[in-house]
Length: 115
Length: 116
Image 1 (cartoon, each protein chain N blue to C red):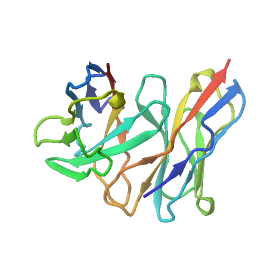
Image 2: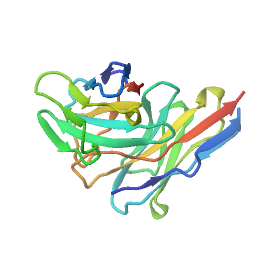
Image 3: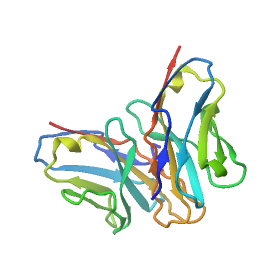
Image 4: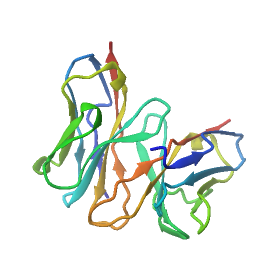
């Protein structure tokens, strides 16, 4: 089974600061990787995903993530955060070799951006 | 994604009652997943279903919880004799299928169960 670690449980930034949220997973096989965002009281929305190809993936709202296979990492970045980015961010991994299709989630990182 | 419809959005039950949560997948999706989100925790997989079949229920508690996805109608997550510890957000997700390309899973807006 997969294990997904998100290193920071709560990150507090001022607007315009740069953001990097860490995500590491345990499985050594071929994986699909996702970042989801959850605004208060809402459902999870897909920010970006990596299936194959260019390891630097660009998503919505100015977010990007870099897949580093040797480090089993898929860190999320944004050069300049906004107050509206305040939300919880979840990293998720899917084993491409499995037919089961389930996602394994990290515990989540709560991002608070002060105006 | 608004395409995955869950209801009710909020449900309050007394201890010992039954809770039924419904999920209609996105159009064209035949795979449904249920996840549970407890306070201060990430999402935990519960069950994966296709039409009329339970594919993986390894995340379901052994007792009181059941899920179905009938040929017609929504998927149902049923919790019998609820206890306070069942209070959580229950998210349904759907995908068109699995396979090597790794279809993306889309989530519904969740059903928040409160047991009093």
